Length: 446
Image (cartoon, rainbow, N blue to C red):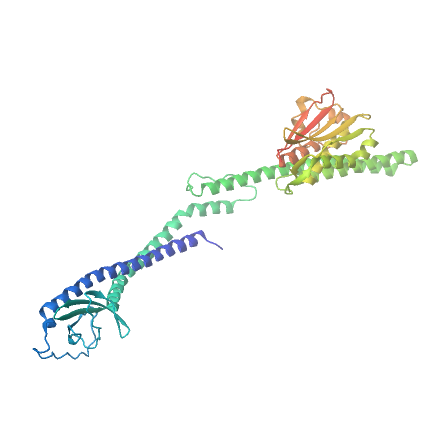
């Protein structure tokens, strides 16, 4: 499991360790550069001193050659080897005969490689001969490395000290987060009160607010769910009771005519119950935690024609004139199955409350660049005082109850929920004729 505390420690300690390495490396390079400057000056001074005061004035015909020392010891790191040469390149003297530096007549510094070792040599050229002062490059690097090595342990100690302080600081800093997690863990499914942010650090306040928002949405969803179950149980109890009475009446009836009427009523009750269950399922799908809305390009005109064709038989049986007005395609973006349910509920509502001989028109068009669906009937309509409440679940106005007992009060609630999922608006208007109801579904621009 990924840990914020462990991740922060790894990254911060890694960065500090890398910084310590860089400091040691910079210390080494700076020390080496400073040593080069100091020792190069020393080599020059030594070479010029040897040239002036030592064996640089040796003459072949005058003085006997000097006897070179025999060296078997281990040279020191800071040792400077001195040599003198005649003008013709004959070695006169060497402080360490084991070092065979090449003869040169070029004044200044050079870096020859002798027996696999790199040397820094300063040559002082005089008319009587050449004096040289030399030092191993490896000796300088070793001394610079020792200086950097002395810096590195304190840096590692500092990294460990900072790491310990970070562990303590992170533990103290994340205590409010642990407290919030413990608060949530101790709660039951029914305890959805907001978590207090009074003592929370500013960095975790957005997280706590997001959790509070989630719990608020869960509370709304649980409340809606409980209300839905209560309403569904109440609404289903009535048709089930009616079905039971109709079945008992059918069992007691001996007359064929009465039995046929009872069977017809029973079939009608079953149809009503089936319709109610279907609408309850549709309501469940439109809940916030229901089926996801899968948006895709579609043609509203084609969708209107398909729904009108599917319900034309029902309209004909009710003696109603159902028609579709879709002269041209109406492109939109939406979930086609959900919009099909929306249209089905609108059209069935219009068919249910329109008297025989009435007209129901369904149209799709584009208005001001926005797709629009219109369902117009010439029924009794809905009084303006009731138009806000008809979108509530199981709400049926007095006029609707007097006209039909088949309605469940869920149709417009389903329409409203699906429209909101598509960021569309639902408007209830009075048609131009002054009679009936016009429902407008206005979608956003595709």
